[in-house]
Length: 300
Image (cartoon, rainbow, N blue to C red):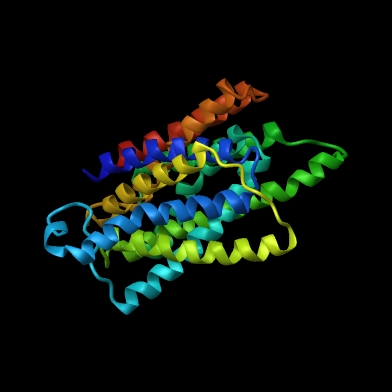
């Protein structure tokens, strides 16, 4: 069951990436991120309030939010900071880089999560899983050669380096967040973690938004895509955390399947945005997907 939940999360995550890309066309990163987090908090506020007003009725449903102790709140607050940091860098890179570049690079996140799982949690890989690791990471290395430039770089290329750095930080911090998720989800209810960490994120983003707008005021252009960001993320996170609650689940496998949803954003970029060098990116993405398939086969 946890594998099916991981695939559902992957599907929602793919449409979440597309929604972010469209919403960021005419809006600043901080505006979209703040608005989407606030909407997510509003969505999750309903089950939280109902769980406190009518606990007996909500207790028999999937949406019940149990009370969390102080330690749980501290751990959840830390999770909020880690995830939010990853999001900020991810939004910046997605706004200024093609989605068919961001999506394949983001697909390497489960590889780094897997590496951390080996070192921290002592997980062991079989031959299929090692093959998947080599295929995915090797494909990304080839991709970097395809898209690299030799000789003197232009002004635009030098400027874009900062966005590639932001993308790399988003991936590294995101991998750390996955490892932290395995740690916290084995101790606390997935609904409680999701609700409270989203609330904490909303407080953090409001503070960031006020700080940024004091120096650089801007107006958000409202679009249904901002709402869809929140809807897809809430569903994706919920089933993802539910999958991790299963004692038999593996964070490396769940993370790999979940990031497989990037193929949706990748296809959107090539088909609808007509991004350049499609075949080079297709070959790279095939290699990444082949690696993820091998990981899945090795984990069955």
